[in-house]
Length: 189
Image (cartoon, rainbow, N blue to C red; front, side):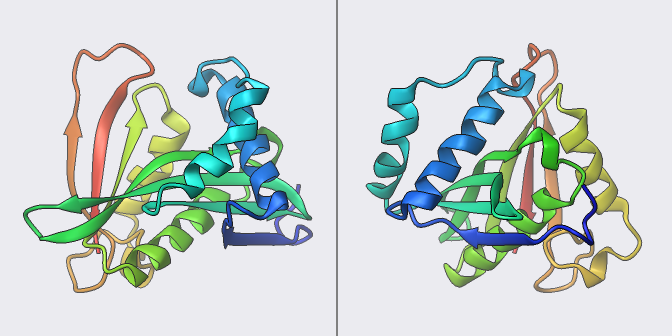
């Protein structure tokens, strides 16, 4: 699918909107069926209950991507708290793009939306874990850290100036079995 011909919509999900609730289930189930997600579909019960359960949690939010009206991507986030900064933070829990929509830059677009929400909430940083076997997710992250034009792209920046997305630390977890986090990445806001 060509990016120029595809209509991409990225938005914060409303858990009570039936279209958004269904899209969350579609994309999360596609992730669960992927080898990175465990290779097994989620039960209908979980898919049915998940949006309502997320809605009960005031510190949860999700970002959805649609391509030509089809659910294509999902980022699930939970607000936490940094005791050292005495400010909230956002933990990115799930990042998923439906296989047929991969390569369109949807992850970056969704994470930019997460950045905007985090800034609105006064968060000091965004954290995310990357599974050790997920080379596809790790490659763009590494290239964004080393990209020479990074200072012009907030949240993907490697520069240390104010209000840029800084790679503050990568904590490598050596000797972890496949499917476990191998790096926890902290991005300062």
